[in-house]
Image (tube, rainbow, N blue to C red; front, top):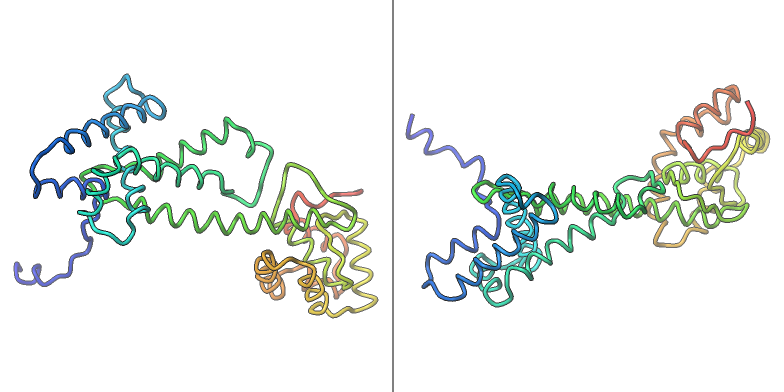
Length: 296
């Protein structure tokens, strides 16, 4: 039994926070002033975190602040010393200070909090109180690091960053379409980015390169009648739309066209005999709040 267990591969490797791994390297060095200075610095950061983010008046608040300090410094070290070892991390802390590493980690969190989390953007997203709450929640979510436990904060950060950059690209493409709406710029604070892109792609099938970022029932009925009468080439219409889109937004729009080509029920049914009421209900599923109901 013991031999069999010894032959089993390790299921989970040790992945302690970078700060903890760096401090472990102190065991191979003589204790000097830099060790005391580092300890004082970490205590100071913990006190600041407790005051701003947890509760400096309770033991639980101070412990949570300690865990957040470990995570914040560790995230900064991972960012600043991506390809260097734990000895290099300790050298960095001694040379530049834990505060430097913590600020680097916290800056990553702050920049992440400023990226859109969702393609539905509302006026509240610009609210300073909401922005501060969002920052705090992300900081706690990513940087809470128990010194004695494995920690995946950097991987969690990278996944969030990648996801939010993709959302940002969708929002920016939708905002471009809004600014170039054929009836003039749309300036509403509330934005359904996916809805805007859906409307633009669906209306592009008519051809002519007209950019439609928002629509209503009457205009949609006109589109359906035109498609059924003129039988336009959908692919040519999408190509015309893409020609008008700046290069930085073409990828997002092209990706949605590829998806809608085979999966959009409005595009699948628009040439057939589906009732207008049915088509309009389908359009609502894609356009959402970017669809104005002119009449019932």
